[in-house]
Length: 151
Image 1 (cartoon, rainbow, N blue to C red):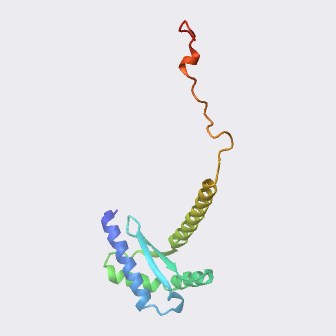
Image 2 (image 1 turned 180 degrees about the vertical axis):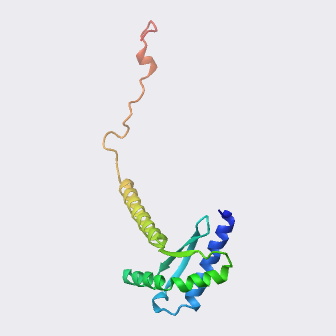
Image 3 (image 1 turned 90 degrees about the vertical axis):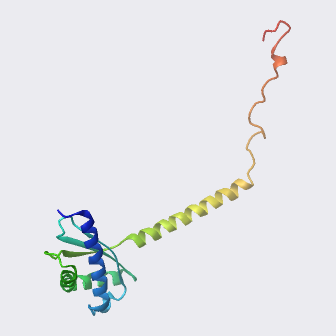
């Protein structure tokens, strides 16, 4: 088991190497709109998961996933040369869903703002359904007491 700080440093370095390799070494047009967002390495430093996003639709995402799988060997070789670790970690590419999740949350917050604005608009012109003062006024104390001082 490696030190967690070492694993984080290695993951960061792997993300840099893979991003650089995709930009400069791998000449596949399907990888033109790929951004490496993060990398994680297991505690034993044997497996690395590289997260990526793709600008485009579902067909672009599928083509990018296929291109990354075909370039996995070249990228792993670059990681081995660039890190200098005894065992080069295997690479697994996973599409990062953070941008889609962030957009979904943004849309939900916009709906909530619209609903709040509608409620505020309706409340501005609202009047009470019953009397203007729905609470009973307290009885005067002198009405409650008779001459003997009892109620």
